Length: 301
Image: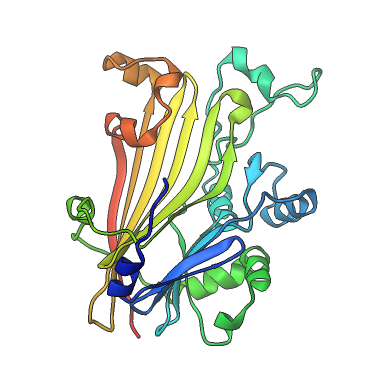
């Protein structure tokens, strides 16, 4: 999605864009919002990740240095999204493998004589809904390079810092109708965290999109899975924060999981052809909700 940014809108909102190589973002109302996009992991990094995750399996394309960061500067609260933490969630959830049609199993072979044993969740489904930390001034001085190392070499430390963040269940919901209004977009980006084509048997894709307006920021973390002829799974997390005069911003977070088999969709009169299900935004309403949760985070300065 190409977005044209008007300098007049930026100035009126008191926002400032910045860019440096694969890093770009915006400073606005005490927030620093930054996306970092780089290439996929090389072979050496893949071996390191497999060791850290205690697995022999990773998605075909892992963008290990890609991340989205939303940092509230006065409190040090940082919400960020990265592939390593998402794959930690995949490993911990450890769902049983989705049954693949017998006629398609041969596609998973790396060698013609290889026997196919799918004894792990090859879809890389994750319950991940973002990472949260509180940084002190010393943490915030980390360079880009040290940050990427911090993400995957210090997962335990990240988990301990996350304990300082308290998301509370709530009844408030994100006003998607208001977000659809014609407010100027000051910054937009989409960051791919990992992707796998399931040996040409579907798609597994984890992305995060962010949109910054004069009044608020909004993001969508989406895990999208289609196992052709078998299963469609959609796990989405939305976050929204309204800018205001309060020193304690409130972030609303909604997580919604949807899922259906192709057989169940066909029974409702929907097409069975996998090519019909390429865009999760279009077909999401056809999928029944299996989990929904609303939470809020009150940031204390």
